Length: 596
Ligand code: ARG
Image (cartoon, rainbow, N blue to C red):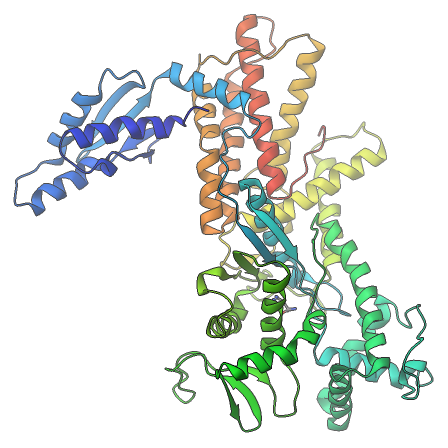
């Protein structure tokens, strides 16, 4: 496989800088800030002048730039050079080189994307809680986590996605005690019975969604009610068989529901483990930590001091990890540590990525530090990838009119409806049958939602704006799908007219720009991996779609007057663009309809 045009140019300039006695790295070529002047630039002359000045020599960056230009001009990779400003070198690549690269990209099923030495990676994302309906707060972890999982797989890594359900806290005690109030005669509450429980769940998802908030608000006002929830939690955690059986029902009913909700978003998991599943590991884990001398008793609670500089009064540093409360309950820290033990034993991963709300940053710092102190992992093996919140127009976390968190199923339905309305307004698919229209609206709606999320820097909050997300113009999911659908339609029309794809030649500036945009795929994918930042890939795909748009208006493909070899070349270029867009959109979880 050939190298990208940018890398080829970097080779040429690095050699020139080295020959002139400078560090070769100064020859790094990058995409230009002024693409209207030239697609690439090299800014090494300024740094080179700095090097000379440090050595006490006089140096003018423009002179250095001229020397470099002189050295590289005439090279077969270069069509034109120009020095601008204090010593920027603008570079136009040779068109034949660009065309040759385009033809290599066509031959590569990955359109230029390289593979990396594989690591075994666990991704912890989703993180929904048992017995609670999914709401807008669960959106980002699912969407970002799924995109990163697919991207890491595309890079060649082995990735295991784990939903890590929240199923081991007070919410379980609330539910159990609430159920006892509602149906005290159930066999699960008879302490004389220890097995042979019914296989049918006594509650549905809707029951739980109603019971949990009811119990929780009662407990907030009534201390004895709270005590009963706490006692039920403690008995569950101590292994009372009837309560364990109830928990198993709660979990399996929830998983069935969650599979549907995540499925609507195109999000899947390899593991459906959770906090409860690692509970059996906790006693041995705590024993090991005690034996290693890293635990401490603090007013009856068992803690690990993870930061010597911690000062609770000055609120400085990292508070201790809580392994066990003074009441003997295990906590969120404990289950996350036990999960690390479980993953070490079952998977032994090189890397674990947690895609979880940024508001949990301190929690993960504490957990990672404790896991390092226990000697299980290095700190570099565990990363918390936080993200910001989805806000309403008021800039506060998005809520319904009644002040509740918006259910995820309502949110996805809103997106589908908005997409259907947009499609109708744009006159798209008016003559398609109903099921195809529904399919397109679904794909467009989900694309709008996911792209709007992923194109932001992970850590920024963003405002949920359904009008903007579903627009066909601008940096949106619908725009991306529309571009790809247009390429599919060109492919069909070409087949009908018996035009076959051929060798790519460059005859127009818009063709050149499109190839160069496509040629940046590998770099974008690599950067996305290194920074764990899907917005970089989104930006790349958007640029490709924009370059295609220009190509589309400047370069007719199937018009009668276009010579046949140009037709074939342009069709090939369009097909290459489609292939790359489909690869990239699939990574970020967007599905392209056959037509729009
Ligand atoms: N269930 C948690 C929550 O709702 C998120 C779980 C994230 N993953 C983890 N390993 N702690 O906040």
